[in-house]
Structure formats: structure tokens, C-alpha cells
Image (cartoon, rainbow, N blue to C red; front, side, top):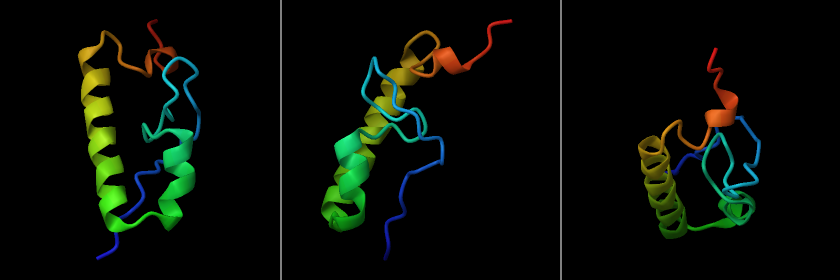
Length: 70
């Protein structure tokens, strides 16, 4: 079974968090993905899920700068 990349083709690093605004990975996680084993990929996906959940709890989330308030 192949574990698919969480990349969403929205490749912008948030300077405040250090996470990609599309997939919530760090630069080392992004660069390591292709050569990472399945266990490491699952660990990255678990970290992403935690980051997304934390972002959703924040008012406006980590992507607030991408959302128009008008």
C-alpha cells in the first residue's frame, strides 16, 4: 500500500508557524517525504492531523491571512 502525499499544491510556508499553508508540513517533512518509510509517513500524517485540529480551534485558524473578512 502506498501512502499518498498530503500535498495540496498550495505551497506557501507560514512564517509564524513554520508550516505549509496547504498541507501543514514543515520543510524537513516535505523534503523527507519521498524517501521516508511508511512508519515515518504515518507519523507525519498524525502530526498534520494534530496541527489542523489546533488550527481549527484558533479563531481564524492558521490560514486567517488567506481569508477575506470583507
